[in-house]
Image 1: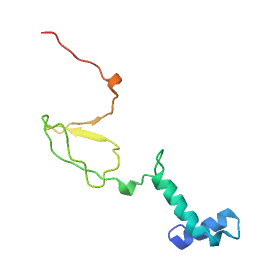
Image 2: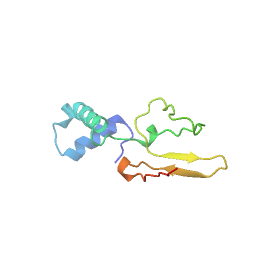
Image 3: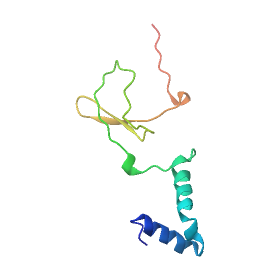
Length: 104
């Protein structure tokens, strides 16, 4: 199975469908499939080629950082401190956060 070109993709879909009339509607079928994969609000298609690694410097007084151009969603955030150690920042809901308080 070779899907390296659009023409080969069309041939593979027609062959896989076992229908003789698919060649008339194959372009529409592919357009609809792409729309469903990329625009699906529940689980949109995410490609590794679309991932971006961004590094920037910030300080503890900064509350916000600028998102990269074309940002769609976050996969992970890693914080590296001055001495070179790093740790992954994990998402927590408010109910999962431990409340720290002191008296005085």
